[in-house]
Image (cartoon, rainbow, N blue to C red; front, top):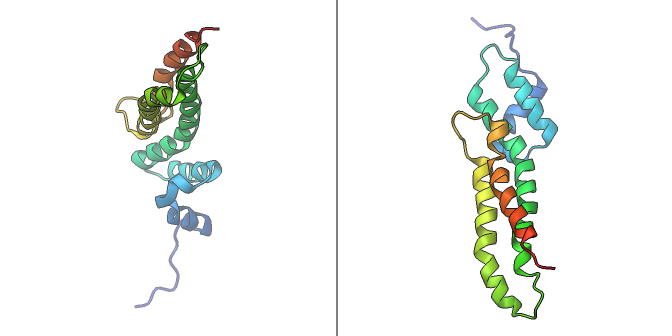
Length: 141
């Protein structure tokens, strides 16, 4: 027997958001917020999806701050009072910069049990902040 109508909660916005959920790294801040709000409005919200989307959303700010702090950590390698070989300084700086950049990306995308995703993504910032303060204060003027 054919069904005449089928009631569902899917509307064009929900279909669009679910279509692009797999590409959440490419969505804007507001679009991720729409996805999170949509999931929270469900009777049984999927916490793992909500946490992943929150980690993606707040991880962008964390990576931005970590990149600025990594530049501050690497800056003293090039601020020298006496003339020196900058290629050698770049070779000394490269592992530090690579570790800071990779650590910030991995740290902001990793799931840390027991911590809210909005706080867990900022752990690399908390690690790089004292290093950046020490590096900038160690520059001799």
